[in-house]
Length: 447
Image (cartoon, rainbow, N blue to C red; front, side, top):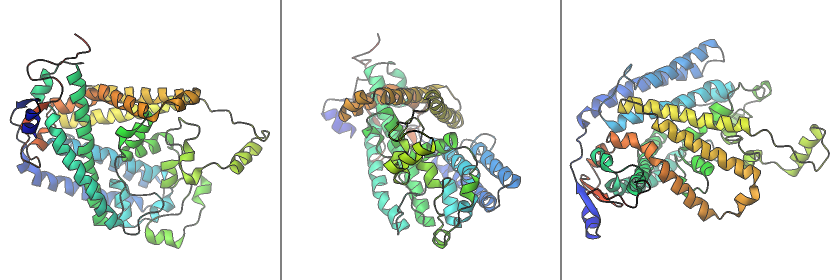
């Protein structure tokens, strides 16, 4: 790849990637596997209990163990950058799943799950959509094709991801700085796609539970809100459930009856506190019509009329929009929480938190809120904007803010582990798609 780029006139800087201590992988995998097995048994037993202080205490102890185990208080760093960042990232997802299972969902629904379903609900991203596949293992195997294509994409993108020394030589705020930072973000996207999603699909094959895709082509989004609705769906759903639905199930939902089919399949009938409703109903509360995206919650004219009658409003009246500020604050809080957890991951994997990632997520939250306000206040203006123009804007904004997110990865050489065993051999050449290795970064935005 590097030789082909050189033939087309691109500058190529050759170097040797820092060798990774892969000999530690067996012992690291064994240690992590043993702890996960113990936690799985502990949390499964807790999930089978009835609601009460013992069940809640066991859940919080399990969450603390999940979050602390990858840190120096537990296993600590192994030197394998992928593992050292991946474990706290997985612990973050599992903690969000744990909170939903023990504090948000109906106890009856949780008790209706089989052992396999419970483990996957705790540690993975299972399909709760309608209808589920009748052959979950086959569905997971077929989805591995896309995982393989993402692996190919990563191997190509790695040639444009700078090493720590090369990244340090690129002038901040230059075109090369933003472009190669954006390419790094695309590489992270596809790396998570083939590593984490691939792992989840394999878990699904083992346990016979269909998994959902982790990403939904976020670079095709036409606005910031849609971008984050497509990026890392597991974390998005988990944060949405925790920050917008953190209340106990209603007494009415607890009175519903369980069906025999739900018991046998490990799926409980739908209620207002079921996983499907928690996933779809008003994902971030920024839009007055967010619930219309879900067929189960689509508002018909008859339903709207009933609501108006219940509120003693004349037929044909329009409901007054609820206040926007509380929703905006909750949305920014959600992005801020994600930023704090990412800083925690950086602290464990990279031995330090710089605040860059938190700033990145706060900027994304501000952009999402600004777009939502614009759509709410001037809907005709937003609808008049062509979709292709929105996609261009989203990608420009993503590339401009990417260095904040990718900076810690690049400085610590997070991709050096992957570069050591590329699909066509070690990646030893960095291709200057923008700029060159002699100090040229033009055109520059600041001088």
